[in-house]
Image (cartoon, rainbow, N blue to C red; front, side, top):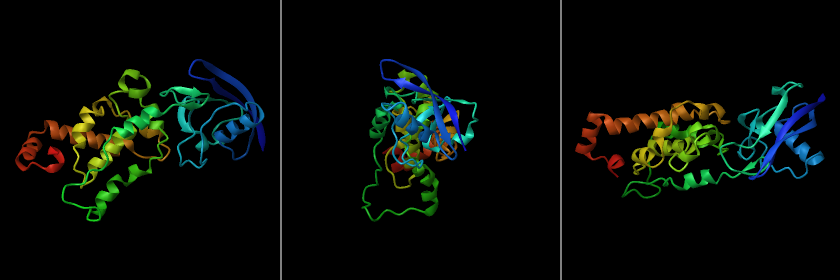
Length: 253
């Protein structure tokens, strides 16, 4: 069964743009990305859109659909009624290149600012050993497809451009949390999270978790535990004294 849907798609570039109305055919089983492709084929051949796998695993087709950050390839048309006006706009937190394509260089820069896994001295590759429970603690975070929906919806980034220099955003604070959970990582992740990557800016509203297409519990399983470890280290007198007495490599590196 097919019908004609009313789409409003943002068209423009970094200088100017506006929403443009389209009437377009929708067929059973289609997703929003199918409709955008049909618009390219039939009415707007110059429309710019970024996509790759169309299977919800590459993260390329991120956009805002009726104001909510989503993957276009994972948003089924069956979730809307035939009378709905479906608005598709680019990610708001990042500069527009053209139409639905945004410049996400901010995220690559934040990724480069986080040092890689740092093994302890005297342990060679191939000699790393860890318990299965430690593997499982951070396994969830490795499902991230870097669609940047969490970065886009985080109001610290989205609503305050001035925060971008000092705040890594939920995706990369989650990366720091993952490394901090690794029993062999010798880098001082907790200090860096607070002093270099803006952990204190996060006020755990869980908006990042709500939009994650991989259903990663970013707030509950990464950000809150990381905040708790940072606070313990900085303010708990017993932890502070223990760190001074035993000089654990992980906290004094």
